[in-house]
Length: 241
Image (cartoon, rainbow, N blue to C red):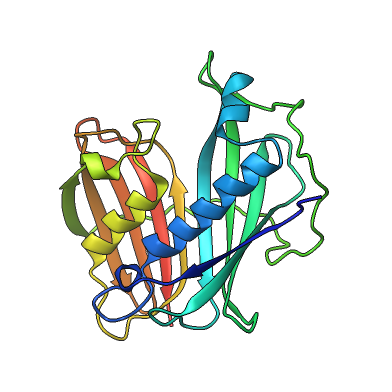
């Protein structure tokens, strides 16, 4: 019934930062790859959605590192959708080593947008052509990041470029993790325990953005704004080991 999808990959040197730690954007890239393929299999992929007048929007995503990954190692990336909510759809992920040991687990929350109204749609006629996998790495509700003040935070500025775009002409979801990594500049020994992003307002090509970030104890808080209109674009919280 295609309740889950598993794909094998070999980790690349470019998946790691200068301290030989797996980069957040690399993890999210593997998640994105298997999620898109599985969505096609179960009848809710990009083309399926467009044919019905809808498209997917990623609302938030998170991953937790259980055990560190090494360059050039072989991994298995697994994904499955959870039971749908009223207006949102959660999907879980696992990255396993060759012996099926859990290395990273993750979750993402998606909503459906009506292409005509550009508004959230409950899309009650949207159903998976598969059963629901019973395993849950995240049994509790996947809630948004609690708000926090940015008073006294460090500042990083950047601009959206061509390489950051997806096939919709919008900033690819994994690009935000690159923006965060460039701003925070993880130091040697700052190993990620968990990484979470809430996507608030999309950025587009040539948009200039400004990030406010702060490291305190084992946590890094980040807020990203569109510099032109000062709209909040994304929020992130990172926990270090």
